Length: 281
Length: 120
Image (cartoon, rainbow over all chains, first blue to last red; front, side, top):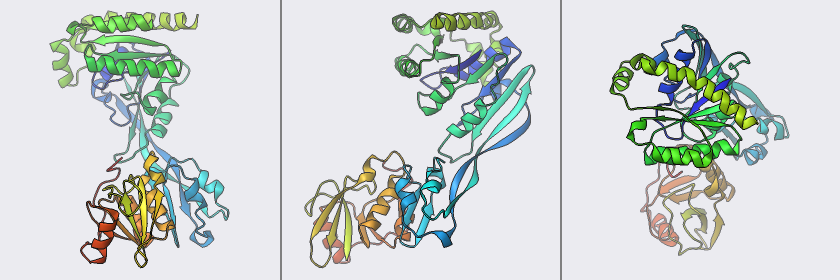
């Protein structure tokens, strides 16, 4: 089962929950797809064994073949290419690597080179197979890095995916590869607002969802009402625990600071399987 | 000589728009005849790369001078390659901007003065 742990709002406890799910379940794969700020390693403490570069193809010019007709720049929807009399310019960070410019060039003056935009790292944290993607600082397009991490999901066993925050392309990219999306929320107006956005996004791509309410003792009534209206199960509530906050500040996972949650996190697996089945029926 | 002024509406009396690539209109003024022609700026709705797109439009319209308030780094690079000189001016109408340029009151920008995606 592939579980993406996501949230509309950032800071609800997505990584805190995802890492301790992995620790509770034991033998599984953990993919950190929050490539613009991966931090699951701070709680899982994996041994990194190797890494691989993530590259995208970007256009370059054989100047002697270019007539400066501007066909490439006209085609480029990202406006990564600019052609002015006698000069051809490429702005790598705007390029979405679609390859269109190389195809429309009438003199075939454009070729592609691989440009590094990030890295995928592989390792283990005990029985957990750990994969992490990181977009290089200053890069604008995280999707190719996320894609490379997701390729490591495999077909065997449980895969826990730490999704990027928000409800944007990055989150959708991860969610569409998941069997179920566990939405971690907090009972605040902001939390509920962004949970709504996330639920709407998942409806649009037809992915089943389950809700975990973190800091539920703040008063989760409205979250429950919303979940009932949307027919999404609330599979676990975690109270706001000082011991967890203290442990987190020392890179200790939730499950270590609050061992009483272990059984709940184990039981969560069955609840997720059930939700997937009910949705499929 | 053709002068391009970024504007929020059409014609010589249009108020200037302080943004370059996200200004809704570009007014091209002929410095000899004083005639003005307005072009809608397609880059206004660009998701990304509005600067590079708008800079190419200025070049395509044949302008040698651009009067605007702010210009990002990528746009500036394209304008420099197209040999378009950029002069900074913060407000007033298109006609006032052109007069100020003619009177030599404006300073040429030697570098981009705002970060990428400033108005986006």
